[in-house]
Image: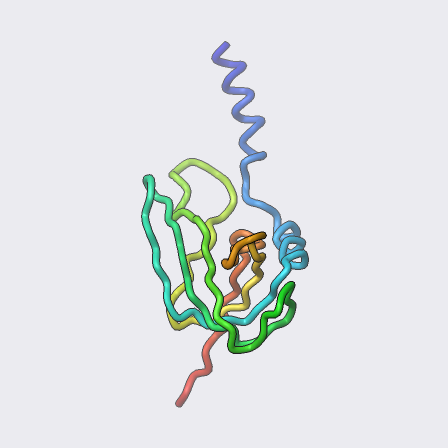
Length: 136
């Protein structure tokens, strides 16, 4: 019996691996809103062991694609849950990064139906950091 359980765990381990990049790209292409944002305020709440609830307020700098009336200068709220890191010895999808105040991102989002906030549409690759210009 122990051998059967061990064998089934070894077979199932690869199924728990990280998601392939093609799935993230597909999710990005299907996202309803693609925006360039600057994060103005971030609140994080810790719940359970290593999980975080993130609520961010951001200003829209440009709109690449929008499902609604979104335009440059609009303000949006982004809410999501993430985790700091996977427990040692486990595999799975990467965590959604916690947004940083003052940083600019290309954001792949989806607006929640019958709601006023947005959530990440492409998991861990929902936010791409845009580098700031360096002044000399």
